Length: 253
Image 1 (cartoon, one colour):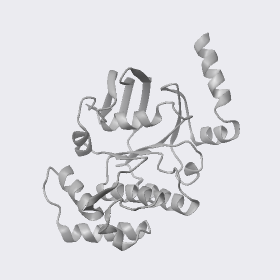
Image 2: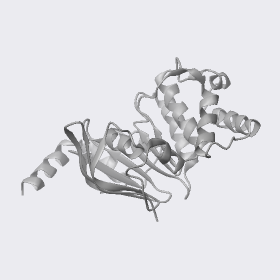
Image 3: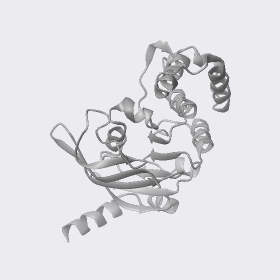
């Protein structure tokens, strides 16, 4: 069964066409990587999947476990089991990190309160796993966090919420090697038949630590090539230019 099925997805932002017929299937328990040059629609796809109203679906469908979620709101998609780790996490000084995650868990459970003590024990366990200092639980959400701390905090939220499908939008950007390895450790810890993931990235380096089942290449708002982990290694050597020329050549024919 598919966790995620995208059919001929076309998306605009204002008057600008960004996605031009994306087709993608992620099966239960699979981790997929989505790669491609800047400005090809990767982050737009991530935001569209999570229901960002800035992006309008003009054609196509998004199915989660067979259910059409194309017109669902962000909170409805989260309750259905989706999670987006943002490229640029927002700072919110008025709510603590722990309170935010606890509130998110309660909301996902239709506002049935999650017991505080088990929650705090699990939070402490996962923070230790991700090498996050204990005092970060009481600090404002992402407030004065470094880029690497924000990315680790996104992974912490994912590990606490345990989504059915996680979309990780350039979770590796701006990370040094130590932080990258910790983030990868968190993603790998989630791997199971009950967890699927789409990792959006420019670079092959994350995929050395989180080996995907499938790699997709996006150009001009659509997926132009799909393969195994070796596809990312090939791109590391050749870059996107040859593939871009091949795609344009096929479009001309």
